[in-house]
Length: 346
Image 1 (tube, one colour):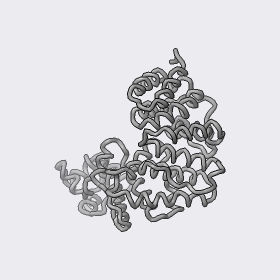
Image 2 (cartoon, one colour):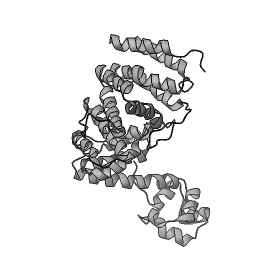
Image 3 (cartoon, one colour):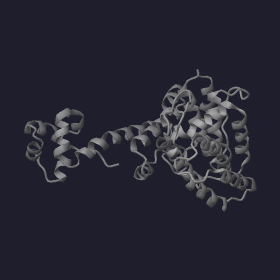
Image 4 (cartoon, rainbow, N blue to C red):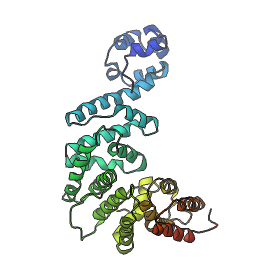
């Protein structure tokens, strides 16, 4: 991110002086004079005056956007440094250039601060806002090596400690989403499921959702199909696990609105879900592919037989991926699903 600029610096880059800016913006020259060299000019200008400056002076609109982000980033860098966490500023810039909105990256760093401080209430309140593909990309960048922070060890340890503590909080949708987020990203970062806490013999929506997130995180980096098979059996046997599985993808991709009761509309077109699944087929290991073929995709096709109007692309993607699969059970699962795909659907 570039350093913040005074009004004089922004105007002079395009050859404008005080009188020029006053004339072009239709603002009294004395007003411009008071703002001209003030370091805090952006805090002092308001309403129509700011709108007039944005319309008249190239570069001000961009500065109005970036200056608050720069200030917030600097604040987060200081606060995280106090907790022993170093922010990878260069990587944050690269992630923004790749399409993750800067506000989401700042939110992820804010979440990091709440987690490493082990502030259970603050983390529980904040983390649910990352439920969705784009904000989750920012949260993923927080936990992955070479991501938003230089060393993830403290973050991962702190997050793993918070996960079972969330079970002891009163049931709420925020708690459900917060625990699921932490379980997923810790499992994905370590390759192992995290301790969820609570009564493992009893499954409510919170336990089922945490279990799913934990399993998906661990599956993301493994070729082992056994965790996926255990999860598939739960989807078949436990109505609450099936409910969560049917709801998770469409709500995360915004094919439907996330709701506390995890309900779906009676008719749904899985357009965004299809795009995400087609990407994931080639992105993750054979364990995750087995999960898609045996647990999620049969449910998705029951919801929307057209698979977001992309069932033919799904068939082609599965056929292409099948040729790279080493595990015989995973290969059979793909073959079985391909045979069950509807034909002639547009």
